[in-house]
Image 1: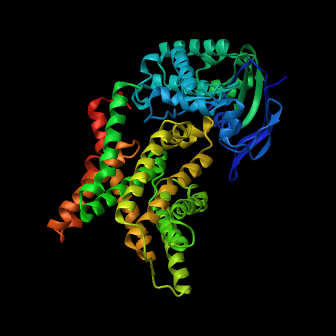
Image 2: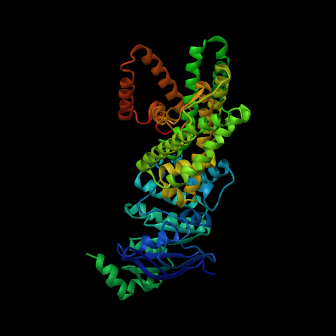
Image 3: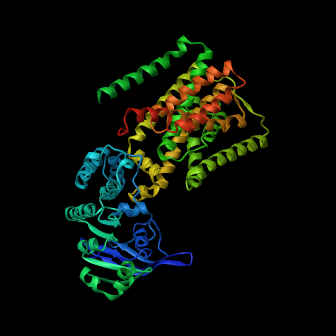
Length: 243
Length: 305
């Protein structure tokens, strides 16, 4: 059974179509990549799935229920968590409190603050932020804030995790660490992931399947090996960015 | 409870007991000042429960004070006072639901201006209504003594502090703080921002409504221009700027400071009193935007919260 299914989903702003007729499905436990050049519609697709925006047409199904047009908080409570491309920590709150609110309000909906804090500490340990628990989130480095973004999403207790360019802006060694982290989280928490990434190699290492977007439309979908040799992908994406 | 927590509670209890005994030792003038202080504490703590935690700065809380006063006047000698005051709080709460529903859709400066605007609209509706009824102000005869009003206000001030403390450490408080920091991200982790804001806005109107009711019993004369004066809203925000907004001691400190300065300056320099207060306010905004409490905490250690 599929966990997430998009059927002919489109989004236009005024007369400009950011996304047209996008269809793809994700099975439980999969790691699916969304690939495409800037402006291809990747983040728009995330916003529609996570309820941050409402699609102009098409249907989105999650766990057998139609969810398009639902508000973002409802999607989070159903078990869809996302990170933001430009991180949005609760800067004035302590790192641990960033997770506590997610654990209290998200899909996990922990009963009490105490339970939520225990859960938050456990996740902070997992992502390597245990020692920063009492710091204000705004004092973290970019790499730290990216970890916090992932940690907060996990704290909601999601079934589907949408990662939007969590590797962008990291150094080479930080990318390796972050990839290990994402794999570990996926394994341990029995999660389904959809990943947007510009770092090609990372995407091909991480994903079972990749969906390629170009100018708001899906041009192909397949295993990393298939995608890498696909002429349309090379033309549209790799060719366009290779120097 | 930690030792520090115990001593804080002990100190707070001692303070409340001291205040409760004040009518036995001071004259009516000092008691009046005390009543004013408690009033500002109750108003500012209630305001902070919404605006301090959510970051939505309400410049319209005078309307809840005014409606509470109006409700108490209308209920005067209709129902007993012990019922009229809580009902005035409920009236303010109901008004908050009606005003919050449209106002809470906008943020930042728009919300600030809108709350000021709608509170003025409500004021003029009451003025028109009273005029249509042929009322030129209403006189209340046989109101309770200053001592009784003082003790009742003490209860409201204490309750407002307890409410802020409890909300701040509750699930509601966690949600509100997340909204303050980043509303889009808050929604993304499951916080229903619209519902939480409306709930907090309504809660924060209850005590100001009751405070308005008590204060109209003190002045014994209801006149809408006075009862709904936007100065009440401005003063609440001033207190918050002076003291700090999102923890119990902030508004408390701000209220003490403001009442103290007003008393000292008002008698000694009546001509320049408002000017000095104004300059101080500007200085605080420029140099101490986080308030006295915020600054004190930052000096004590940046990692704490």
